[in-house]
Length: 295
Image (cartoon, rainbow, N blue to C red):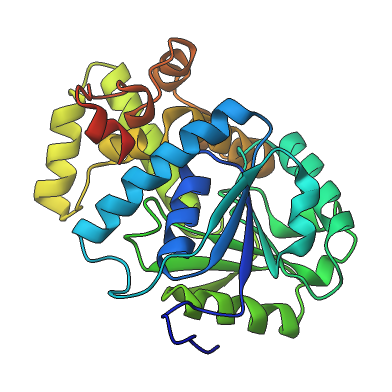
């Protein structure tokens, strides 16, 4: 990859499908590294809100020196037409962790991109090999699990399916290098490494609060103070989005049978009540300021 005289990174053109928390995070990361992004979602209002969120997150990233200094940002375009992915050099699927939704997006996107275009799923728990049955060229599908917020956390978990080709892995590593991300590759399995460990931990933490053993503040405080966690599991839940966690836990429970992955009733109730975490202003904690909710 080379840089143009004005500091723009080439030759990548990224399509991100899904304008939620992770879609906007990934867009900020790419734009900040000079890569043009087409952001796709099903609703114009969602895309309008995504523009505001991306501007805010970009400022947040700049304040924390998380983006290259002096790099001219990439250009953001938004659309409700999935056909726009056809002009991208790589497509990242960042929709909700619901298999039927992912199936629809990946099936349609794979029919729109030319051969040689990596199809990247920001999957949290759905196995790559399961998704490979939905696309035209399974060798071009790979999982890249960006952390939240992805413009701050450099490490990513790359999930190689049994059909993923060497050429796809090389291409994806090139893209991640252009984004200044550090990648560790794991083999395919439900939840992979991060969420196979993290999600049951969060679920058990929620059950402790549900059962009255301790408050959210105490549970988090103990894991931070005694075990050295930077952020406790329940603040992490609020950051991820409790609705996303419930969806992911259901995926894990269905595919592994692990009883530790059956979502805690407290989290299911919070989703039902609209208390989704930072993005809704309330989860295990209350978030009063607009700024704190959007970051």
